[in-house]
Structures are given as structure tokens and as C-alpha cells.
Image (cartoon, rainbow, N blue to C red):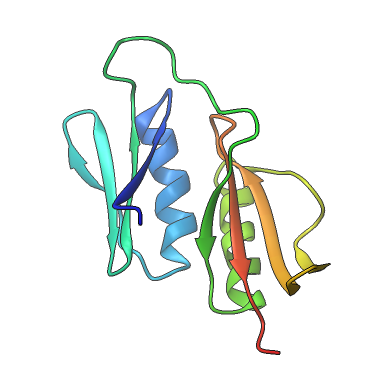
Amino acid sequence: MFSHVMLGVKDLEVSKKFYDAVLGTLGVGPGVANKNRYFYRSPTGTFAISTPINGEPATSGNGSTTGFLVQSAEQGNAFHAAGMANGGVTCEDPPGLREGPTGALYLAYLRDPDGNKICALHRPAK
């Protein structure tokens, strides 16, 4: 359904450091520069960060979350720890399992250096 997700950021290099660390825990290589953007490519899609091309300030979306699929709770914990060590701020409940109508989910939420909310998600086997 989606080809890519792009988030607006204020400082490309600060955000690149954060996303290189967080996405590195998922096996994604460092961001590749293209003008005022960095692209992170994987077999399942592309994630990018960019300073806004319209010259207006970057803002985080209230109510928006970008989710990243992780293979285990341990990988999700590494994702969260890498984010915290590189300028991220934890948000929502602490990382862990949550029961929902579709079963258990492991979730770990962070805000990136610009306030964008991201999440690591793992669906344990039933």
C-alpha cells in the first residue's frame, strides 16, 4: 500500500544520527543523502527525513505515529534504547507487551529529536 514515509525535521544531521542508530537495530543501513533529505531503504519500503522544501518550519503531527516492525521484543528494546541514547524521548507506556482486541502486541514508543512519534511493534506468535 505505501511506497514510503517521509518526516519533516529541523536539523538533518541530528535526525540522521538518531535514525541511523534506531534503524540500524533493524538491519537498515545509514541514511543516503539526496539534497536536503536522507533515505533509508529496506526490502519492504523506504523511510526518509527531510527539511521542508517549502521553507516553512518542520512540525510533528499531533496524533501521528510512524510504526516500524521488529522481529522480537529484544529487537524492540534495542530500537528504544538506541533512540534514547541518540536524542529521543520515551512516550506512552514503557516498552512492553500490551493486550488488545487482536491479541498481544509488543510496543515501544519514542519521540525523535523533532517530536515525531515513532513506534517499534512486534506481534508475538500465538
